[in-house]
Image: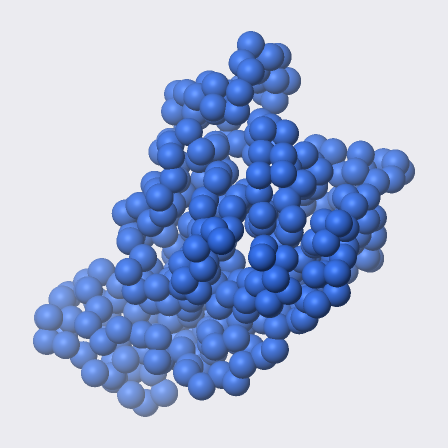
Length: 364
């Protein structure tokens, strides 16, 4: 049996990557991501024009034209389509204008993690209306409309204690209205074979019609970490990733420890702004290739009494630290790739969750 998969806030396709690596037959029904772009045309103006279109495909054509006219390239879409097979009319640009009723009962598993937004400025209404205007609302709305057998929702752990826990109370109450049995797991990449300290919440929901399968769902068992950051690194690094004097001074400065981890054993949590402005995990190397030694742009200096050079991680190394395969294609500029990786979901963690979902035999 092939599993029908739909993703929103799809990014570079961590769920799709997990299914591929697990060799689970699956069909990507749709994906949706606007690539962090912002339209100039207002939401209300767009909504007033969408009434002229009857299908998601027609709406998406209109929305795509708006984005093309008002914004730069959707680099997320470029990366996604370079790595997964999906029809152009099934990659949607904006979750706010995606009509889930077109996919009602056609999706086995819906996966996504909305950007975390504050709920504290909202009124005193309860339930789904409490979240209107936020992207979490769009996630919940699509679950209600699509009615997938299973959903997976991912976000930062800060959501649990944000606004003294009020944010999570609201989100929990919304999950309770969806007519799904659900569990919350708090999982860290470093507990699943990836040397990255990436702690995230995962909410797994089963349509209440499948309660018997939900009762079989187990939390993923942790895996002993046997490989560390240095095991995920390449040895032949292009010169452009080595730092000039200003970068060298910054990343070797002990006062920058909040922003920079030098030669760490376990990577810090990757983020959208990683590597740029010398932020995140960096490396100090004492073995200097001749081409690097001869490059006047690259600074050579001393750190803890040793002579060497410093460098950023490459996009390929960052992808490895998120569990993506070696065959994953990079088709966008480095700055975009770093952002996309930092915004993604740990593939290794998703694999363990999906394996446990499959073990319930909900999909047959």
